[in-house]
Length: 334
Image 1 (cartoon, one colour):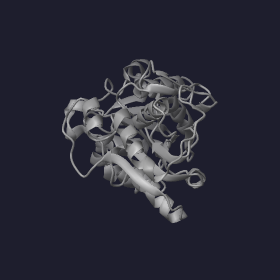
Image 2 (tube, one colour):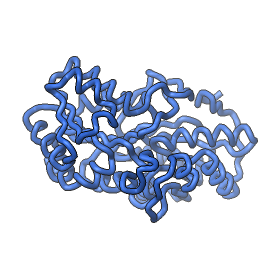
Image 3 (cartoon, one colour):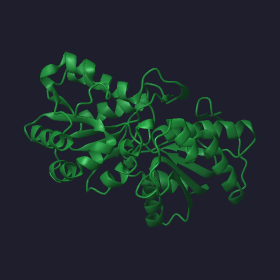
């Protein structure tokens, strides 16, 4: 599989909706449900083409999830859409009890994740959803890094019976993958191979980590390993174990609170596996970020390319290796 870096033509939301529209042409059991967010979730084409299988419940997220669970028990395949902050918090009880407890075949698409709601502010930021959903037994949680992988995971999940939560970014992202990408639950993907420092990221942060790695290489800095840990739960423990063989530092990067997110999941797994790894978690500290343009907030909380690069450089003294031989344009070894 070749990995490439270019500007994506479509956002994750458009890619996800486009894939669902395609799947609905051949699968009459798929039903789309939203809480008055057809436009924001890029579902207008589906609403127009499949009005009998499109349900807008209004601003009633709890009802939306319960309706979806009921439809699932009747043999349908509901995909519910709302901002991830509303699905994980406002409808938390219904997701826990109606969906995961009963293993209902409901796919929850949480959009506008992290701080991607921008100037809407903290009320619309989703910085707790990973911690909330990850704590639910038998839950599956996916956070794709680009539009291609988002569409591939939607296709994969449409054929798997049982509940899952997918975390999608609002803003267009660089396409890191081509159509040969294979979505696999429970497996991370190594995009660049280095030594000593492994940057493990999800969602939008993967692109920033790749850009930081490329700039470090161009400036003669350390060559880092970059991992797309698209499946947050179940965690790819085999990959963590393999990374620990030639890395002494893990840096996790996520647009989520540092408590309960990817960093917590990686740290818990590393401790239980006895990996003896130093861990640095980059994310939102114990605070409520203010409404700002997304770029401003990412820079403020260390989530942009420049900040990730600086974090790597600060930790580089712990390791001291200067490997070469990685092509950050393609993401594959030279």
